[in-house]
Image (cartoon, rainbow, N blue to C red; front, side, top):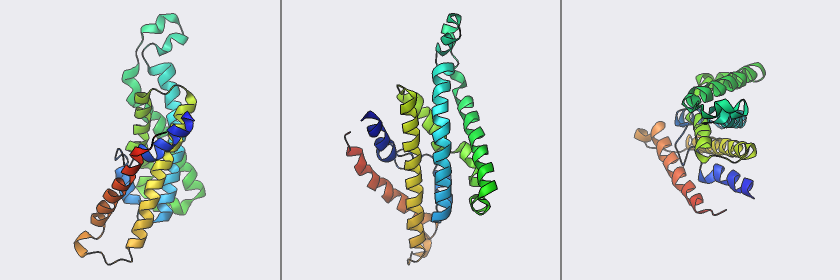
Length: 204
């Protein structure tokens, strides 16, 4: 039940886009059509699902104060937490490079559509934010970190695909000229964020 609660909350209540506004750059830029939004959303899920649990292990057994005591009791006072940012980013960059190579090899059309925003997953705030929230939430075990990673990725995927679907439909609407493009998109995102606020009342 705890895993279900964490999973649902990470998708709806603690949504990376609508609760924390993380990853907005690629979110706004790639959400022009459902195909590219779907591809980037799946890539974000993949990167989060692998990097966040791995960063959890690194944090628990290497970076936390006293984490290295499993190597030797003499290391009980060693604190490597100051390396968290650079280690987390290095792990994320490695997996982002892997995703980029896979997409370029097997889905060249999607690779061309995503352009610069695919390698920019490495600096996507939502990816790094997931690892930092993992530190803050102090998960009890590896399973919780994996569930949180999957839920956060699905939440980001859901947000970008929904916006892309709305923007595709809006292309057929009579939007006032001053609001066309990014203007109406900002308004739409704001309304979606307000709609997602209803999930904050969920008690699990």
